[in-house]
Image (cartoon, rainbow, N blue to C red; front, side, top):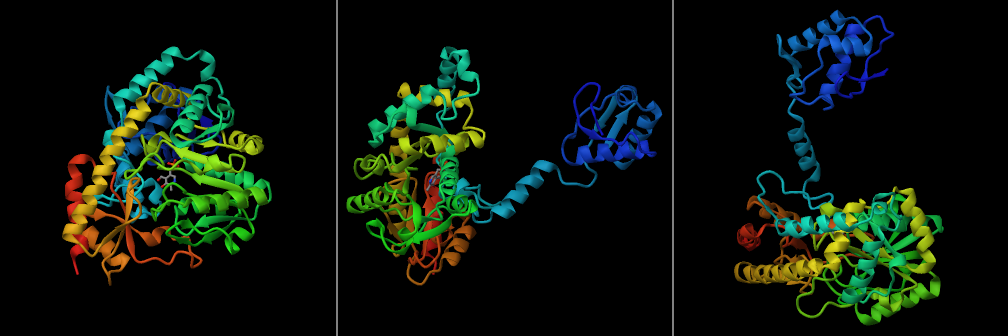
Length: 483
Ligand SMILES: Cc1ncc(COP(=O)(O)O)c(C=O)c1O
């Protein structure tokens, strides 16, 4: 039976009908302390107040408190009250949670979230997370302040499932200007990161009766999981130096293809123009959906970024982008530019999953984009990451010349092929001995034999804060130099 405290609300399962009322109250309090609803330090209501609230005798409450004091769950001082001390003998909760996450995370069962390195591994060179120390806190605060000061109240109501209009407006302009995307604000759908956008598309595909999705030979395991979770079969495509190879069995029965055209994740090549056209023609000819994951398209260092594939076939390509690389993945801000013919279905999926990110952050991002702050941030980050990539290449060529950095100069990660004879597991273990967390290319292999590649590490060079970067890559180079 649910009851509430006199001076703060707390759900307590006390069986007020049972004969053993005191025992039931003790159990309910232990449960509330154990699962964190009553954290250590919480002051409990006076026994008189709690008794009145529960409609039971004050002595029953006082006895239950006394029992829990004796067991070490509570402590009490006459005249001062009764406090929660914690679960006797249990580790404190936050630490236990961290340990569970770390042991489960291992070398990154969810590389997308680039969990922190295990204890003792001070240098995180897993791919996925930008330099969070470079997050433009002041600019974000200022943008939030301006957005809140200037937005009408109605923007704080239930938002349009596509996202707040100022952000859709800002994104349509930004994407056209920087990535050549052909869209308009009506066809932008703001989502909680690209992965949420992909989940919406997976639902649309499922509802349309698609059976399979062609995926690249390598990619994020969790993107594949999003697709297979709704019953879509994954059909991995081979890749060569020109990117994913269209045609053949994988495309044969696929209702969609998921691609990273600007910078294949994680292999690092660009999808060649002829290949882009072939995919676009396939989609136009079969009615299939092309999903363009443009996760790091702004970060190209050797030349001007290649524009989005979407411009080739705006009626067939769903373009997806994210603020996870330019700002921070914790914001959970991403976007889709959706072909008109799919819009209603995508919006329905968005409504059914409860909508996208909160309106205030959407308004802040709109403000950051329109004020030029987002471009500035990207220009800074581009310069910094370009320098980091150059330093990685230099450190490896000096200390471990048999390791080879492959892929175009772009993005926030590089593929480092191992010296001949080294296995990925050995190189990862050796990096760990040097205090460095990295992932092997095998983590990203979509299977089905499409991804035969030389053993390699996927090195995310953006994550360490600037002061730790030199040591991080020196240690990695030392690990790769070992026999
Ligand atoms: C291939 C790829 N796509 C997309 C993303 C961005 O995902 P999200 O926007 O869900 O953070 C990442 C980030 O790690 C990525 O590696």
